[in-house]
Image 1 (tube, rainbow, N blue to C red):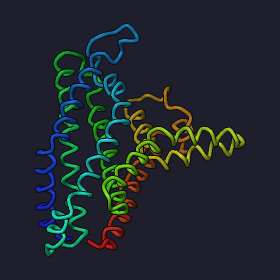
Image 2 (tube, rainbow, N blue to C red):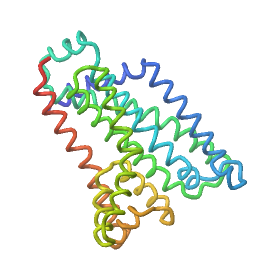
Image 3 (cartoon, rainbow, N blue to C red):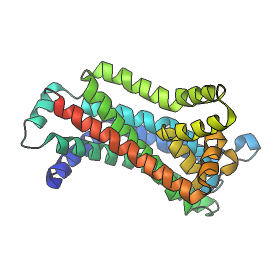
Image 4 (tube, helix red, strand yellow):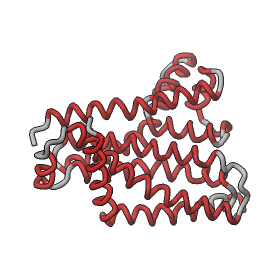
Length: 276
């Protein structure tokens, strides 16, 4: 692994991503949505105004779980299915394909992180200036898990793009990946539990949580924000099986790292086997 080559490719990928109007549009839209949710997050409860870090993060959770994976998949698919001429130039250089993969992912993640931090940073500054600062220590943990979720789906986009080759097919598969993990997975899990006995259903819920990075981040964020009362069935099963927050959070962290490492290995093997 050549760190200089990886850094060079990452810097070039970051420049390309910043110049891409979709990245800038995402940064602007995300910042506006974050500020809007920060202000109107509790409007249904009759409260309007900036509510503090913990309440704001709780309001932003669904936005993160829906939007960050979609943007990460889109950015990754666009990058890894770029024009054939530019790909041939890159792969003709005396650089290993593993370094190219790592460099492109690093550049894409830097771009996604910059756009995401712009939104979270804007909300954080406004909250710090105009509302209570309680919960400020938990806010960076929430942001960190959001970025980790983006990295997971960037790696998944690399797997999809290297396996599909054609851009239109890759986009279709990426959209299905987003739909499956964000919307369909939990419905399938809850439907399966109705056909199992209680003890078996609890075990199944625990195992199924680790099979979805979106659920891992959701439960992790709720643990950071101390939102145990809204954990849901999977989060409650996790705490019941592991007997405490610390053990549960360690399991979630290991599972999230696995969701990054395993697809990365798969993408590397698929890229090595690709005829470019």
